[in-house]
Length: 424
Image 1 (cartoon, rainbow, N blue to C red):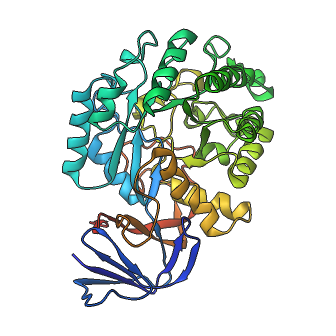
Image 2 (image 1 turned 135 degrees about the vertical axis):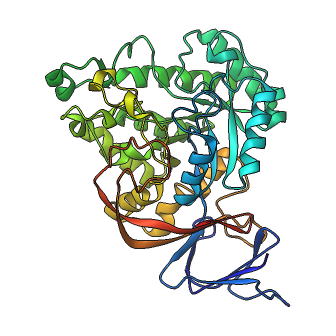
Image 3 (image 1 turned 180 degrees about the horizontal axis):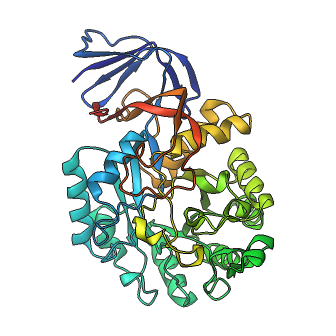
C-alpha cells in the first residue's frame, strides 16, 4: 500500500529534520520526504495536521512474558500495548521461562511475534545457560536464530571468570554483551535505595556501591577484552560519572536508563506504594537529577520503558514483598516528552533517546525517516492530555507508579512496515 501523510511536523532525530512536510510510504519503506516520488499515487492519505510524525520508538527493554509467564501478560496483549504507545521495535530480555538460551525458543518467539503483525521484536539471548551464571550460552547459534545481543537480565553472575570468558568470546565474534551492574552480595535482599526513606520505613536497602562496585569490575573486563558492552538501567549519579570517564577513555561502552527513574526518586515510595517497587530501586533525588542530565548530555545513550507487567496479586502486598516492576510501553513516549520539556531540550533531541540512539545500540534498521528506511513511524499529538488509569492501558499489566497522573502526548497512529497497526 502507498500512503501519503500530509501536514505533519516531521521530526527525524537521525537527520536533524524538523518541519512540516509530506511523507510518502511505499512497499513498506519511506519513499520520500517533502516531494512526492515520480508517479506516486497514494492508496490512502492521512491528514496529520497538528500531529508530529517521528520514527517509531525503539524500546531497549520490554518483557513480553512469553514463554512461561502468560498469567502476567501475553505476547498479543503486550504487542498491542507497544503499538498503542508508538513503539515499533523492541528488545525482549531473556528472562522468560525457560530462558532464551536455545535457538528453538528464540525462533518460536520471533515466529509468534511476526504472526501478530504488530511491532518488531528483537530477542536478547541469555548470556549464560539458564541464566545460572555457570556456563556460557551458545552465542553463535543464538545469533543465527535472531538474537541481537546477550544479556544476563537481573540474574546474578557472581563468577567473574565466566563473565571474562563470555566477554572474550563476544569480542572475538563481534557480539554485544549487556549487563545490569549490581553486586549481588552488596544488594542482597534489598528492595529500596539506602537512605533516609528506607531507614524510616524499615525496608532492607540496596546501597549505591552495589552498582558502582559492579560497574567498575565490568569496565575493567571491557578494558581487558575489548568487548562491546551495554550497561542496562543505570540508577546512580556515581554510575553516570564512571560511564562518562570510560567514554572519554574510548571504551566501547553504551548505557541506558529506565524512563521511570527520570521522574521518580525514593521519596515517591514513602507511602509504601508497591507500584514504586522497581529494579533497580528508585534512588535519591541527586541520583535522579544526574540521570536526567546524563541522558541530556549523551553520557547515557538511550531511555527505555523497562516494561515489566506484573499480575495484580503480586502488587497487592506490602512494599517489601511486592514483585518489582512497572508497565511502561504506553508511557515511554509521554514520559520522554515530559523529561525533554522539563530539561528544555528540543523535540528532536528528546526523541533521539528513544529512537535513533536506541536503534544504534541494537544495531537494527530503525529510528530513521530517511528515504529507503523501513516505514516504521509514530504519529502523535504532543499536546493531547490523558490520565493514566488502569482502563487507559492496553497492557495486561496495570502496575504503573504513574496511575492517576495526567500526562501530555499520546500516539494517534502507529505504522510498521508501511501498514497502519494502530489504531487497528
